[in-house]
Structures are given as structure tokens and as C-alpha cells.
Image (cartoon, rainbow, N blue to C red):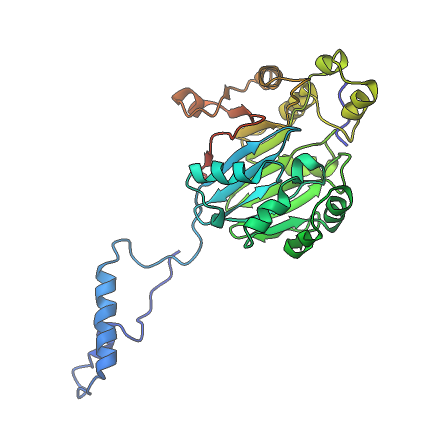
Length: 342
């Protein structure tokens, strides 16, 4: 039984334009200071070397990228960035593995400006202090309660506070070119958050570890171009699997995890032409498989009359309505590039 879905402006002559130095014919010529004459020549030369006209000062939309560095109860971490900078969401993957995976894709850690933490479970924050201690330019973005939960529940240095910037749900904050809004999700950690991430005219939503779709999660998911959403378990595999009953009950609770069928039905219900990429995350190793999760979601979307791609970049994929990917549990995913809307 499905759970409830709780212009360019006219350019005026500048002070040092060359024609400013030529007096009208009916006026006597005045001597020109050598420095002004030099600047005028320099300015005229620079104009000739500008093949694309005057510099545009307003920001221009550009592509941004996404990569998962690990997804599941063994460790969660993902990278989002553009040509200028980026940040991590969660820090449950070994710091050396994160550094190497990013370096392999020509992304130095100096490019990574911060870490956004969704909640205080160890598979989401185990390596947060190590990453921050070895990259002192980075900041930790989490709610005050989430920080308290990490310090209370785990053996982590209290110096974590030195790196933290408080964030609050429903109040946007910025990391360079990205505007991020944390929102409430249903899970049994401390002050659990999803993230709605805006970049120019596009948005990405990350909602991992949630037992059902809260009203605020639903609000943000419906206005996104790229979505990372949990598809944790197959109900029959969990029901007849080896887990003790108390753990099965915790997983199935509304503040536990989402099963494939619930995720599939929700995605089919909310899909719009705007939603172009769906990434299934946090798949259980014991109670799910990428093939099972993908099949469930693919069938639900097919029943809506949608064509499904696998984000492989083939001509057939380019024509599909939506790209569907199951993020790998232990290994880095490909680096996915999201281009500006045409």
C-alpha cells in the first residue's frame, strides 16, 4: 500500500576614447598630457582586439555538473559544480577516495567550497571533519540541530564547529554561483534535510533517506529539472529477507526509507516536461538491486507514455523524454553535464 504524500545599452564615449582627444575644428588644440594620450592609444588597441563587441557584465548561464561518489548505507557523497566552483552534498565516503575521484575528472579540492550535510547518520557525515581539516578553505553547511546531532551521536572533533555556517530550512543560502534551499524530509535522523539547488535557470533536487514524501519535499520536487531521489528497497525482498522484524519495521516506516514502488508511482505522478534526469539513490545492498529499481520506475514512467533514456548520450537517449540512472553504491558515477536551456 502506497504511503501518503504527507540588452545591450547605448555605449557612451568614455573619458579616454581616442575621439575625445580631437577638439572641434573651430577650437584651438590644447596640449594632451602624455599619460592620457598613452591610455587613449591603449584603449583603442583593446577595442580592435575585442572580436565579440563590448563586454557583457551580466552573468551568462553556463553548464554545471553532477557526480555521485557513493550512494547507500556504506557511504553517501555527491559533487555539484560548474566551471568556477562546486560543493559536496554529504561526506560519508572516505576523504581520500573523494579527492582522487574528483582529481581524476580534473576537479581539484581547491574548487570545492563546502559540504552540505543532510542529516547526522554516519553514512552521510563520517568523513566530514577529515575533509574539512585537510581543506581548510571549505565550509560546513548544516542546520544547528544537525550539527548538535553529529557532535552528540558520533566521535567527531568539536572543532567541527569552527567550520560550520548555520543554515535554516526554507531560507536560501549561496555557495558561489549556486543558490541552495534546505527543506524538511521524513527520516529518523536529526533535523533531516533535502536540498533544492538553483543554478541560472535550472534546478536540481536531492532527497535521500526519506520514508515518505513530505509536503515541502513535494513542493520542491515538482519544480526541478534534475532529481536525486531515494529508491531504497524492494518490498518483497525486504519482507522475505534476513533482516530482523524490528529493522524491517523501521525501514518501512514513514520516517524510514522509500521502496521502489512508492518512488516509481510518485515520479509518474509528478513528471512534467521540465524533469529531464532522474537519479535513483541509496539502493539497499540486501533488499534491492539496480535492475529491480530501474525496472519498477521505468514501467511506471512508460505507463505515462514517456520514453526513457539511460543518460549514455546516444542519439536515442537525446530523443528520450527523461533520463533514468541508478547511482552506484560503492563507485563514483560518471560526471553528468547539465547544459543551459535552449
